[in-house]
Amino acid sequence: MSDSSFTPRVFSGIQPSGGLTLGNYLGAIKRFVSMQDEAFETVYCMVDLHAITAKFLDPATLRHNTRELAAGFIASGISPEKSILINQSQVPEHAQLAWIFNCVARMGWMQRMTQFKDKAGKNAEASSLGLFAYPALMAADILIYHATHVPVGEDQKQHLELTRDIATKFNHDFGVDFFPITEPVIEGAATRVMSLRDGAKKMSKSDPSDASRINMTDDADTIAKKIRKAKTDPDALPSEAKGLEDRPEARNLVNIYAGLADLSVDQVLAEHGGAQFGAFKPALADLAVAKLSPISGEMARLMDDVTEIDKVLARGAEQAREITAPILKKTYEIVGMVGS
Ligand code: TYM
Image (tube, rainbow, N blue to C red; front, side, top):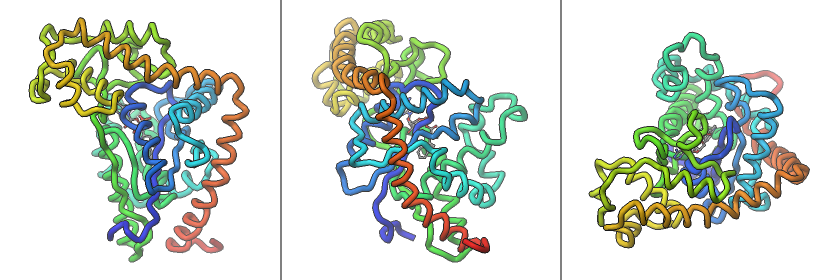
């Protein structure tokens, strides 16, 4: 089935399990912003139901994180006039469709999810059932909107393949053409931003070392200090991308530069090839501060009085339910729920 019969619609989400990182910004949010102005309806979500799968946060912290994430979206350029902004738990059809998908997805499919294995670690028996079922809820997030395109970083690729498998199996089992086969959108120089302390590890809000990441709320001095201290090798930058192949830390900093400046890696190297890190790091720090400071300033302003954010999320939930309620109703009809 092609997705051509479906309205082009974008859905994506971020967990309010901690603060936003530069990885979230370059891998996901920048693309969220640009897709608003393309030929798509766009829906962006704070996935608070996902944020409790690893552990329950302190309730005040979860509420704060969710609002701060909404502030981060808006401050980065996501306009509530152009996009629907929602908090997942306030649109109950996500969780309702997830139950149906729990009954579509197979145990074997879920057991192959590398993020579950990574997050559960050695003690899978002690992890929550929610963590195991996480990807089925993610599929429901997407398919409850009949979303055709999902912008994400590279780490979400396997989850999006599972989303396609769930849609295909549902359509096949019920003999319908109901759910679209969603396209992942994984694009740009920084689809996998790595830790500043270890080029083999993803930059993550859950890394115990704060120096490993740039937080979207970091001030200019902190950003500059973290970049200055970022792990590198002793060599100068190469003049072509091929020269970065076995240099994960150098490659990461060049990718970050490219992502922030909207340049290709080759364009960055055409300008900075031959430079030592002593010169490149300050250039990167200046660029990062120039791009990120206006965002953190606007986030702080929005967080000063959260009524504006709460209004945006309440309106978003109403708009979202105009899309999700009919799709859930039709799903129930297909499955055979009486009274739907
Ligand atoms: P989460 O909250 O871990 O990350 C949100 C988005 O940021 C991207 N990302 C990165 N990109 C590049 N480099 C990094 N270091 C980096 N770290 C994070 C992620 O790829 C993601 O796009 N399961 C999702 C949330 C989710 C979702 C959805 C996404 C729930 N339902 C439906 C899309 C559609 C997650 O944990 O993202």
